[in-house]
Every structure is written in C-alpha cells, then in structure tokens.
Length: 224
Image (tube, rainbow, N blue to C red):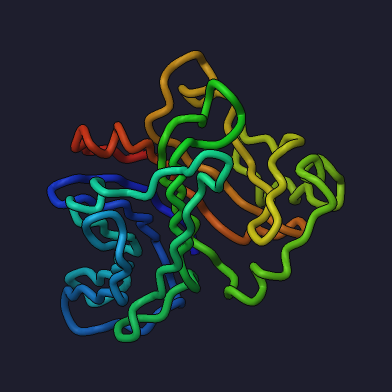
C-alpha cells in the first residue's frame, strides 16, 4: 500500500486523501461512490466518501463538505474552547479501507505555533486506528513529542519532516511537520500536510486547510 496524493478540489467542496492500494479491498464492478453518514457542520454537512475506479478497485477516500458548511461555524466563546471536534464514520457499504474513521476539527482561532497555524482552519485526521485506541493516547505534556519513545523509525517519517517538541496532543498523537512548507517561510498558511504518530507508529494522516483558502474555491493537490 502507498499513499498516492492528497487533494482539495472545490466544485462543491471536497477534501480528499487519494490512496494507491493493493490487496486492501475487494474489487467492485465498475466505478461507484459510497458516502458515510452526514454530520451537521455550520449551515451544511460533512461526510466521508469512498470511490472506486472503472476497474472496480478502490480509487479514493475523502471527506466532502457542502458549501453552506463554511457559513455558520461555531465561534469561540471568551475563555472557552476554540476547537470543535466532529467524528465522521466511514461508509457502511463499499470496499473496506485502511482508514477507520475521520476526525474533523474546526479550529475557530487556529492553534500553535503562533504566526503559523493561528488562523481559522480545519484539521482532517484520517485515522488508521479505531476510536478506542485514539482515546487511549496519553502524554505528560506537549513536549513529549520530542521523546525518543515517540520518534518513529526513519522509514515512517517522510523526507524533510521532523517531529519537534510541543506537538503532543492527548487523545490524538504527535505531529510531524515539514519545516520547508510555505507557512514556515513567512507565507500565509493555506493548506499543508501533517503525519501523526503514537508510540512510534503512524496512526493518522492529516490535511490541514484554512477557512479562507477553502472559501476561495481552490483546486489544490500535493504529494503524500
């Protein structure tokens, strides 16, 4: 199995992780699309989608957000939480995939580091483990991500990525980032890709996209 690419393409609004897979799903007959149960988001909905290609094999896994969902999103109350989590189940029908579920987090005020990701945006966690395992993720503090016990083996860390201190989040994991990404080069954050781990194992893959960028109706793709 290899992750082929991640894309954000907007006619409606789609945030998708596209996978190149082998031996992970039974072939279906012809192209098809399977949707997971919709979850209310803003004035619209969000749901997972699994698509098969003309050969009937798994072609993509993604999240679709209806255009009204970008309006009416929850606002952070003074002194309250600014992160609003949504849990998206995978489709009941169609091919089984390596993705167990998707955690969609609306970050109304963004999150650290300051000057990088502190703008309103969405985090899309495509988890390779089930929700019970995610709930068991525990850290003593955010700097645990720098611990040797959390550093993944070289073959699980993409070229150019680092797992710095300050990225350990309970009930989620540690986050590897690419220091060469545009948002770390004094450019506004638009879209990026994060790899997540726990106990040195890859547990999620995470496109992050700013609200302003999605509202611009982009057509964006990047290698994974």
